Image (cartoon, rainbow, N blue to C red; front, side, top):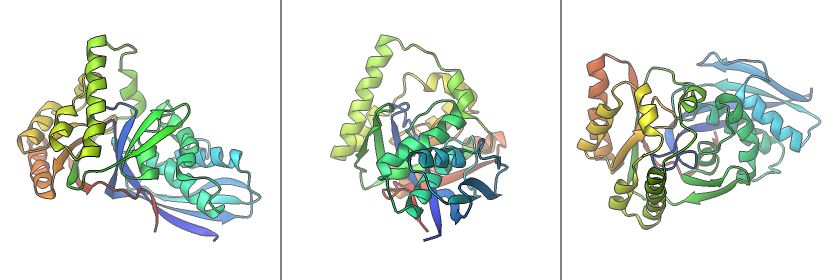
Length: 306
């Protein structure tokens, strides 16, 4: 095989109670990436559609991740990466993770799959570090493994794939403003008060338990963020009104998707998820702020060959 095309899905990280450790994979929204073998060793960036991304291999998330893989598995031939970028950078739905994961997944396939999907996360993290200033895997893990994932450790890359309750549907609203992860991380505090940390640990443990037991009530009670949301909410127009409208429309919980500005909600069933989306849209309509809405079941497959 000399060429491959892959669908690189978006994702929601943190899920309120799991900053930098929890994430889930989206189904309908994602990038398309084509990777082709070349005679000259190394990585080149070919065409880029949709967004004005850099073609310098040292500045592009996809190529940086790809180069990290080739350092561990040298190749006598090279690769050209063509990107149809459909996830806007700075959207909060895993744009950089889609690029990084897509590149390492596709090249791994062309090399004969020397690495497992879990092992690919370590290489993709090099791209995330370029994009956000921190090597974290909360978006990468669900994109590569599918479904919900828990990153127990970024250092040893101890990643657990979690079950997905069958009726769970995500609503994600993306206001058309850019909020770079590196900036939204900069406003966070380096210390957390003990009482808030205890609440966050309890919510995280309860959330994971709810996924295993399909306990939608417990899931709802655990989707609380006492640590990150209070700081990042100020960067997102109408955040608390959008969140309140989602809950009033029947959502199990709602919060900031990744680093924002997108806001996610989880609901039991597609009908409620649609109602939640309509309620969230009204808040941005009142502001005359452009947005897009994604309705998604949990994508348990993750990245895939087209």
